[in-house]
Image (tube, rainbow, N blue to C red; front, side, top):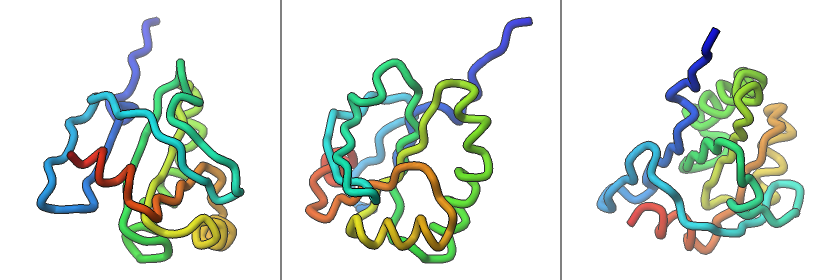
Length: 124
């Protein structure tokens, strides 16, 4: 039986800056390196050969962002079946991400784009 890859495994990006155009699902993202909640540096190229669900969100701990993160965490095993990783990016610091992950039980990577370099480049 042939299994298809769910469309949710396409590269996703939501602009933090409403005036900037949003990349289309499936569009390649430029490589970048940012610190994660555990202090390690994560680069997009680290996930070569895997699907990456790259999502941008406004702020740790807000109701909508918390629900979104919980949904990704709940479905993490489904993504892993397809060799997919979840990576969240916001303008919050790595320490904010660490607190958010600890409080909400999140195990996937959240990256700190405090200089807005990635968020602005992806949104162009």
